[in-house]
Amino acid sequence: MQLTLERSVVRSWRASDAESIARYANNRRIWINLRDAFPHPYSVQDAREFIRATRSRSPETTFAITVADEAVGSIGFVLHRDVERVSAEIGYWLAEPFWGRGITAEALAAVTNYAIQQHGLTRIFAVPFAWNTASCRVLEKAGYVLEARLRHSAVKDGRLTDQMQYAFIA
Ligand SMILES: CC(C)(COP(=O)(O)OP(=O)(O)OC[C@H]1O[C@@H](n2cnc3c(N)ncnc32)[C@H](O)[C@@H]1OP(=O)(O)O)[C@@H](O)C(=O)NCCC(=O)NCCS
Image (tube, rainbow, N blue to C red):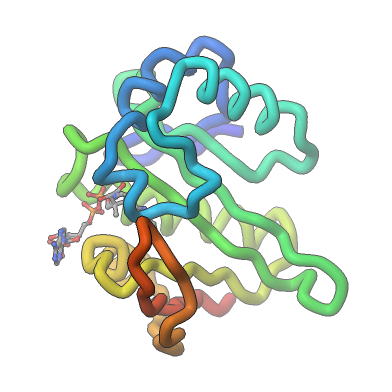
């Protein structure tokens, strides 16, 4: 898979992406905004394992965000099942040196469209922590709408937090 955008190329993961992605992923400012399944510290071995698992999955639902063919972030969605098979949850992160250039908002809009087209979805959603104003803004820029504040729904780094439920409806 490859989506050539103005600010980045979103493409399938390659084994050779492990070093760059481990370097950028090993950042507490990224980890603090993601689920605990995201390792911290983040080693090259973690990156290799992530890329191997991603490449072995079918359909392919997680992609590298690349700039000048360097992997600088990740974006992916989880397809739901059964009666919720028209829904997916989307998640993403970007290397800190690349923040604030509109890269993620553009990638999010493109992958949202890709997921809808490929999988016949009617709904894609995300649940950033309430403190993550940058992610809420990215979702709004990509056309997502705030549906709910999920009060006291998550614990991160020992802090109980609300989550902001955003959705894009096809
Ligand atoms: C959230 C994240 C993906 C944003 O990526 P990005 O490429 O910098 O996002 P964009 O440049 O497309 O847009 C960021 C927007 O948030 C705004 N923003 C950034 N920090 C902000 C803050 N502290 N408060 C309010 N707005 C903020 C920017 O001004 C920009 O909006 P604008 O274009 O209207 O000015 C990135 O910061 C990241 O990887 N964070 C850690 C992981 C994470 O939070 N993942 C999402 C989990 S739900």
